[in-house]
Length: 452
Image 1 (cartoon, rainbow, N blue to C red):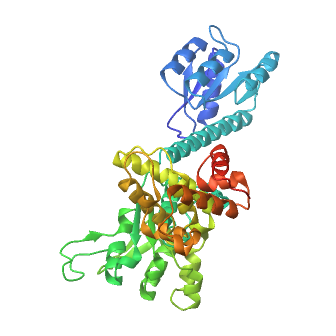
Image 2: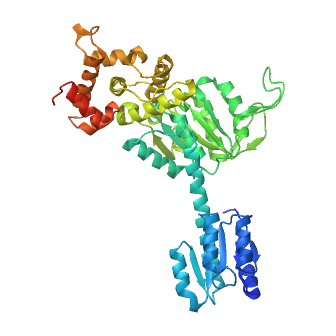
Image 3: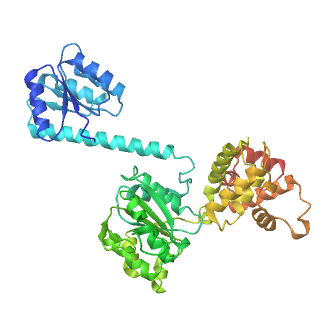
């Protein structure tokens, strides 16, 4: 909790107000004092407080009314009641109405402090959780879409590792979303207000990569006519994402290891050590353990990067996420290009579900974007998809001597049959694969007289 915001203390007894103020001040907790319930209610109407410490029995407004007022202005407010023995039952009843806790008079200062500090921590956690939820909900186009067990597990791991500044290694094939996972780790961390910068290590030769990351001093090389800060300086306090880290030369790996171990580096052409606080997230499309065994990657750097390892599954291993991803991309690009495309028909969804997607989520997104571009307002058709996906599906479901004579209905029937086969006759799973409701599936099975 931000200790710059004081705790609101409400009590009509002068000596009790002073005792509460002095007890909390001894622990570095600031307070704002109100002389009775009416003054407290007015103050709550002016400002939201995370923690309120109030007497139960007061004139004008009692502690129960203060509780109701506080929760109305801030549902996450932690209200702690101070009560005498005669009103202990009322205090217990108040906790059922939403009060965080109560302190019984006469109280030990340590007991009061412990209760208030717990209330402050609880309020801080609520605010942090709310911030994270808003961050995820407002991250349109940046969320990790999927409900498969693999993606749910990955989301759980991201949530667990994000609050800590440890180095993290992300493994996954090209197009699986490694940069997205790195962004989410940053956004869900305490560094979220600081910069997040990605750099593709494979796109730069060693000398340019060193200058890009560490910076250089004037005269370090031809063309270095002034000092230039590197990305480690630029992102200080934030997160640096190093993609394709397996492409680094062995010489540069030594320099990166020094930064990770000591938090210092030397600029190109410089002599002074620069101190930085940067969280490093690295990614590789090839297993770094295999690169180590092949002698192309330093073992000590691998261990330093691999403190926490996250694996992003390829799309072919989580095919149940394809309908959700496809609908998400259709909505995204329909809005972007001003199209009215309400859904994805069964033949199109069947093609998407049965293609192997070697380019993973990125290839799926590109295919859907192309389909939206070429589709007029209305219904997506198989012909709107890239030829690669259409040809693979056609070759998998259509007899070789009849590839040019199928109608849309015949193609749809073939898609449904293949989806039923994949789902082993399970109607609910078949409907999910096709992206239609179970009722629509039942009607189409009846229409095409499909028996399984």
